[in-house]
Length: 389
Image (tube, rainbow, N blue to C red; front, side):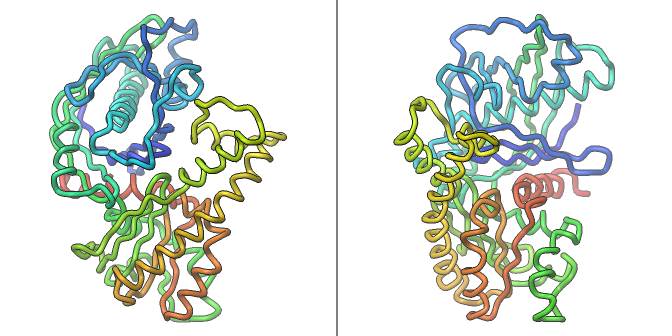
């Protein structure tokens, strides 16, 4: 089967974007893996049930020249539930272009998607599936260079074997990646924005309509604007100056700021108060934050404390980027990424005051779109490059 994917290899999540029935769809899993010393025992669930919940129960064997350690892995939520050693990205070190984790999570999701497609079409479990894949992805500006991008492209390109464990059955998915494009995080955001429905502007319009009747009301109205994009992620935040849809050469940077750094501080504070395992991950903290119990409330209180200081540092970097990268000359600052949701309460008002004092406007991307800008953007890039339609 032929596939074109955009892949967001984030520190918190790995997300694939693809077109299905005319719409862009997404599949995501936490960016966590756990290497298994032996093949796990099979589950006694029925095939239909396993396939239905496949993404949340990814158990795979990967054989690829691109990774250092072939073998069996739990991936995503399944890895988080495992009591063994978990591996996630070291946000203080970066290294997405050299780390095995982005390839393992990406290839596992691609294989699972191919298996689900095959099973849903034929309602039977194939022993082997071949996938010819074209993809685009991105790495942070803080580690981006032509060489690091090429290194990751070379690692993705070629043949990878992913065996999915489906109860007692094994399905071999052979992934042949014919073309891979690696760019900088933040550079594809404008592609995603311009292809979005106009309700992506609802917060912008509601915030400015009473002050400025002439504000743009459709995404196409921004196609010639000079903008500064602030993509707040888990391990890094990216700052990119864009003219229309084209990033300005040399006017981008990445800083090791984001939700993951606040999460690490919150986990440290949590360890001071209750007895939690040293294996406790940022992804597990995110699960605790959703709980409506005493532990969930404690996690939220500590995370609130941790996010405030991180938000102030991010605000300073936005102000510096406006002055130094953009030479104090942009029409709009776009704010998006998963961190834009987490830090919004601590950032928005001060950033709006800064914008008013300097005569530009803030386009804060709503939660519905904020976390998928990278995957949608990389998908549009892949489609433009490889499909030409």
